[in-house]
Amino acid sequence: DQQVKQNSPSLSVQEGRISILNCDYTNSMFDYFLWYKKYPAEGPTFLISISSIKDKNEDGRFTVFLNKSAKHLSLHIVPSQPGDSAVYFCAASSSTNTGNQFYFGTGTSLTVIP
Amino acid sequence: NAGVTQTPKFQVLKTGQSMTLQCAQDMNHEYMSWYRQDPGMGLRLIHYSVGAGITDQGEVPNGYNVSRSTTEDFPLRLLSAAPSQTSVYFCASSYSMAVRSYNSPLHFGNGTRLTVT
Image (cartoon, rainbow over all chains, first blue to last red; front, side, top):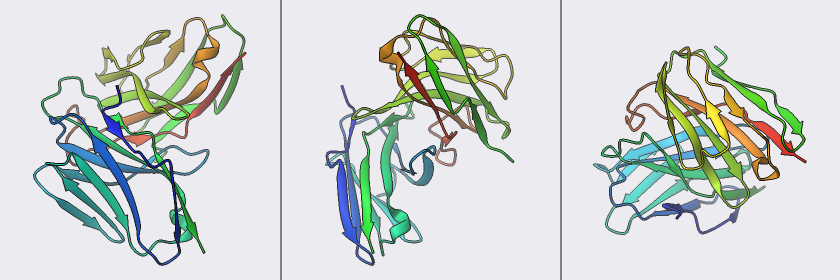
């Protein structure tokens, strides 16, 4: 059973516009959320994270929003650049979970069109 | 500082063969883990370790063994390869035993692409 879901397998955005990637989760115990970016033939690289005590975290062009009541988080990229074209994974974990596990979504492939 | 190093990059096995995927990190990370990535399935945890001498199972452990004799190394062994184990395997490490520490994300290697025929 997929506890973290990314329902959009792909997204295309024009350069300079905003990219919004979405992620939903089912486990209300999750309290730490991350976004990873993955280029072909490379491992995922950490992008940005947010804890459940916040509803927004910003790092340069990247902002993550968390809506705990809706069990939803999103990643905003503004402005989008061609180098942002990659697969984006969201991940979640619980501080009350003794399993030390991160649960990953299935990924969204972002294409930024020059 | 190499980060997380995985070898080999590519491997082809016949059904029933065994092999070991190597993973090493030079960041003195306590936590290490193995994931597999399959189309439409995201990243699924196979095994993990919170420190030398300690390992535990993740979501999809069947057919795989791990050991953690040193902080740096965390090899993944396929005991008898099956076509269902065709996948891309990623090793990841994190500084803290508490993986969910807010300042301790996972750092990934570049993966091993395994094909079992």
